[in-house]
Figure 1 (cartoon, rainbow, N blue to C red):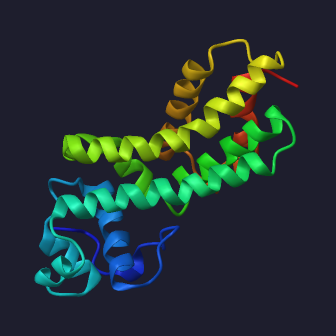
Figure 2 (cartoon, one colour):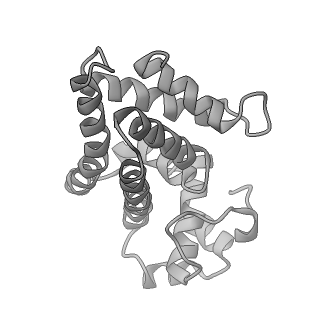
Figure 3 (cartoon, rainbow, N blue to C red):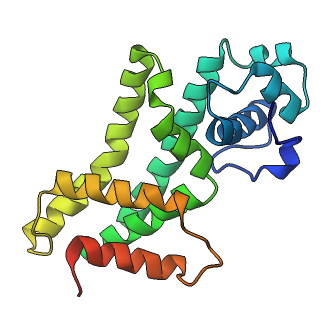
Length: 202
């Protein structure tokens, strides 16, 4: 049984409105992250949203469809966030800093539940759905790989862009497990630390 009793205790998720569908996905993202996809029942979801269990299926055919929708919304919202990060940066170093800052916010902020679910519940998604999500994810990753390739072309990055991206993704994703916003390191300072890890001091 879920420890969360109502939707009001769950922060709003970026990219979602307060429609019935949005409320279901907001609750699902939180429950799938905190207690796992397999352990979360349709009854759990309905209780948190405040509806009857059968009402969930007015919006989604299956529980897996809910999981996939959570992942899709997280990718779409952060795709737009990454695009803006690149467009507002002047040169590869500033663009990379913007991407790092944006991804830290996606992991630690309003889409943190969805992005964590995307990583840890991947195997719960059918192969066909995985292919669809991977195609969306590739567009998201393209921003990173292009900026890292530009940084390497300018002599700012010594290592392979793909490997660098994988290392950065792991480091940024893991912050969910230890970073505290009220701790000794601000998000801006953390961003600069990750940037220095990737490119070295300026």
